[in-house]
Image (cartoon, rainbow, N blue to C red; front, side, top):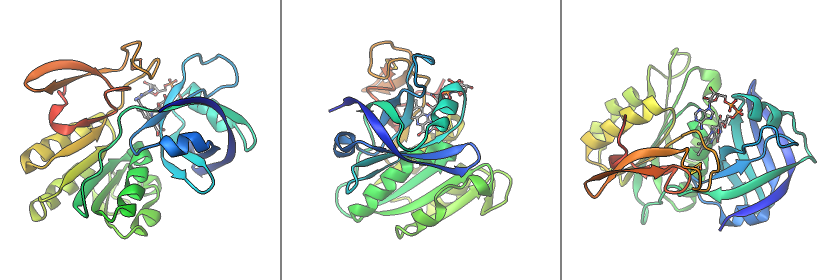
Length: 263
Ligand SMILES: Cc1cc2nc3c(=O)[nH]c(=O)nc-3n(C[C@H](O)[C@H](O)[C@H](O)COP(=O)(O)OP(=O)(O)OC[C@H]3O[C@@H](n4cnc5c(N)ncnc54)[C@H](O)[C@@H]3O)c2cc1C
Ligand code: FES
């Protein structure tokens, strides 16, 4: 079930320059939210920009009834959002889309995140920990400064490996290369989850295919409506042998890794 409502900001925290964690009071959204789903956020206080911006649900605080977003300032909409302060209200539509599926029982999974992809992955990791699922977590970022929430995630009890493009922390190189090097040792994952830039997901899909493991990837496309009406967000998939276009906002954003057709 989705809601259209005004939510009050309880906290706007700058994590590093250009990256913010925003907490909003919204008990209805908290109850309905699942990892991998997103909200359509009205970033300004007027109708400019007209379109809402899709932002993943990063965490929920069930006790306080707060939904948390983690976002990078990319352009006009997110800049306006960053100007908002505690006590301001923000119009939210959601939760929207199909999120990650959680494995049955106390399985072992792998989770691969690149850059701002950590936003929805964090919520997934919190839920997996709650259900007693063990995870090998691979976090990639451009620099050490952008390896977000490393200590918190380590605190969930997971094995966490890190990679940076510039070598300022952990493995020097792409997180997918780090993951590819580690997978032959433990390729019995019940699921391999991924979220990050398109190039990273494409490479991850290849690794998942050669490992023969099931995988789920969270895709990002530019969105208009966010609710399946405008078709601006379609991606190519192949299910049951036939190639088709699916809407990232409604059939996704999370898709089975073996169904995404990379163009
Ligand atoms: C399902 C989904 C979940 C998302 N979750 C998050 C999140 O949790 N945190 C976060 O920081 N961002 C997230 N994004 C990306 C976020 O929606 C865009 O950064 C935002 O819409 C940019 O709006 P803007 O007005 O600030 O920038 P614009 O002025 O609209 O664009 C600035 C730049 O960002 C690029 N851009 C805009 N939208 C997208 C997009 N959807 N994908 C890739 N590039 C884009 C544009 O091409 C342009 O180069 C998500 C996107 C989707 C589709
Ligand atoms: S954003 Fe309109 S159909 Fe997906």
